[in-house]
Length: 262
Image: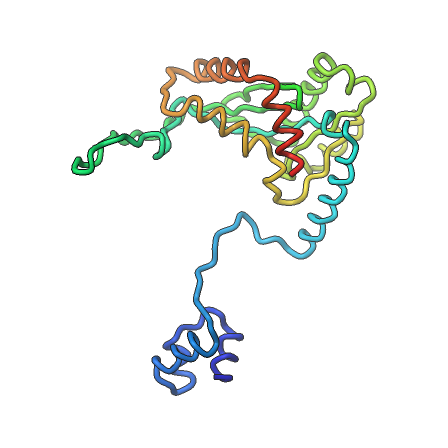
């Protein structure tokens, strides 16, 4: 049993046959030792977005403690402006659950024509806070968000904050919550942030729980247009703007003050 335990400790992926060949025991004996004596079970690993290094985990804990301490101030979340971007296609295919139909038990499964995803799409860049939408724009076709592009977007955001949120503009108390993609951490970005006195809310590495766009805003928008076919990208953009215009302020407030802190 000790020999088998040592083999398993050295290689957690070793097979029963490999252990039998190495110990000159039968596969049945190895199976009994592993299952009954060592009480082991072989499990496949689950997929995770990223395996964090120890340094990243330590930084994650530090930033989370800093954010929790900052949130002790009841006015902190009122000054946070969160952002993200996402692609929207003129054809958002239905999810499997959305296409389900009630049929008799003896009936065959319904059929649905397979549609290829359209190449025509648009990227939406969104900023909102607890009061609602702060700034929204659609990027030109084939444009990606680089540091240079993002600096220009932030300039337009600052103007939107000046017009729509004068309270946090006048005392420069607003903070931008964005992730750690290269466009947001490049040196030109840091220089632009310092020059304009813009502050950010610390974002732990690979932390999707601090992405309200991904777990609420974008899924909500896509659920509203899923299964529809738009004749053009401008028609899609108009439909998205109409949906956003009808979203009550209470939803944004709930997202920022109830969902985000936890």
